[in-house]
Length: 190
Ligand SMILES: [Zn+2]
Image 1 (cartoon, rainbow, N blue to C red):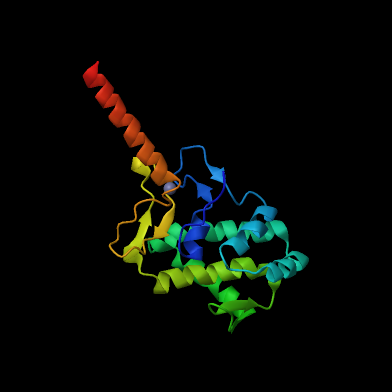
Image 2 (cartoon, rainbow, N blue to C red):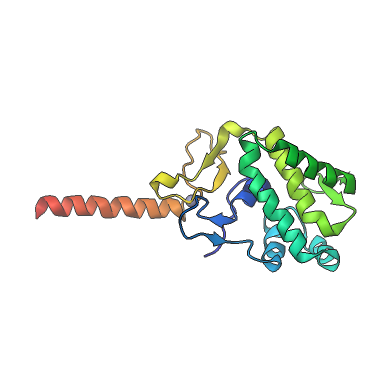
């Protein structure tokens, strides 16, 4: 299974690295090892290929992965207003190591210590989400209708986006509805 990047914000993309997000089902862990983390981080736009080379030269892979998974656990909590002090401490550590630098298309933190760069930028992204995103547009791909629970910002004009992706959960829901309709029709004629 490929991981679709659908959150519309790096902090939500971080939350969406286990599928389905609701516990109890067989979950796929997309950040299963440090190599997976290195492959994923550039996909969500928080590091470049050149950054990754610097990270790889200086990081402690297991510690960096544990840091990122800890941050992932903070996404839901801090969105619910909990554990803000933990995020605050993690973010302060990131600020202490970093400086703002003009980059395209957004200003990214430039870690003076590439060993922690991925986690530092994710911590900053989570603070950015809480501070500046329009959370009235925050949705989850509906678990009670077979969706994966992935979080995303609905940027559609009429706030009509329901699924993480129309190619994935949206298409599956559609085919389930069709099967259901055929069964009902078949039942009537038979
Ligand atoms: Zn989904």
